Picture 1: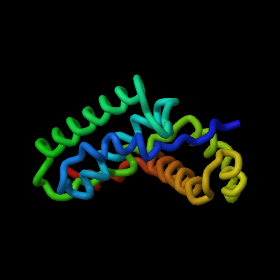
Picture 2: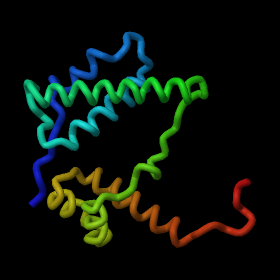
Picture 3: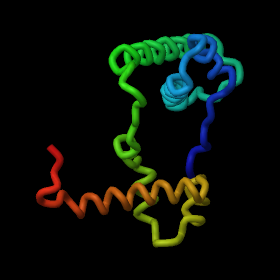
Length: 148
């Protein structure tokens, strides 16, 4: 049986949000929230409605870390136009996703969604990513089409 999905609480998210600079570009704000959320959700304490003590200290440390990363990105990559983050770089399938793809039988999205506690749309996205990666591995590079 899958572990219940955890969520970040409003109080946990507020720790970072109150430290974000006024006027921060929406894309940078979204990036900061995403980085912070990934750190929080990796901890079993995620979802605490009123963080206190050691958990509060940890959340504050992570908010400081995320702000430092955001500042570094702005200094190193700022002014270069929009930053595109390719899904392929991040789409390394987890063990759960690989297991799900191994069970995929061409049209059993609903069954897999129920088994893994996901929406059918999310199962389709995972399977599509896996199928694309498998196709690209089989295709290789075509002669003469390498980019310099």
